Amino acid sequence: MSRVEIKIAGFGGQGVILAGMIVGRAAALYDGKDATLTQSFGPEARGGACSAQLVLNSERNLYPCVVQPDILVAMSQPAYDKFLPELKAGGMVLYESNLVSIRDQGSSLRQYGVPATRVAEDMGRKMVLNIVMLGFFTAMTEVVSAEAMTKAIQDSVPPGTTRLNIDAFKQGLQRGRQLLDESRDG
Image (cartoon, rainbow, N blue to C red; front, side):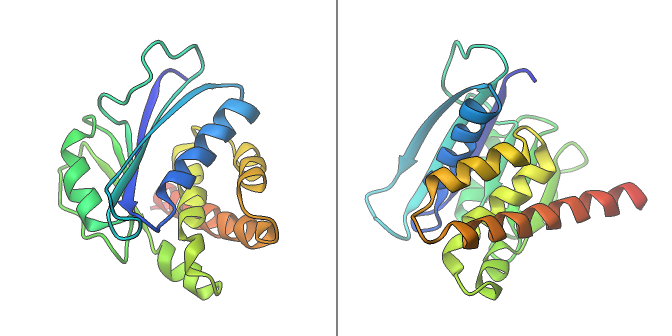
């Protein structure tokens, strides 16, 4: 794997920063990659715009900042609208399908949606939508292994919520793998 730039974006309160931290931890501690994370959020604690930018590399990262993302994870419409123009040609967009209406960007972008909020609500805890997105991200991108993500989630979530978060991750992972299987068959 060479350098991969990732931007995860959404509203404050969706767990965007935690999602970025989990991806970075999984890559660096469990997959042996170099990972850097920067974050940005508005003055509002909840409801304001926020993003996490990650650079993953099998070699040492000589420049830690995202220049042009290869992957955009959009968990809100404003995040999608703001960051889509920054995406590299041929890049991948993973979006929360109940909150984001995608624009047709031609054949160069690969855009895939998952109803992460609904999945999380069906599990009884809307707050794990970010972990559902991480499962979907893991299946669709394969830049971090499922095993590494599972370990990083276990290390990162509050005590007593581990099983719920692992189940949310598995739900997103399953949906991503199912989508990939369908696209190969069709």
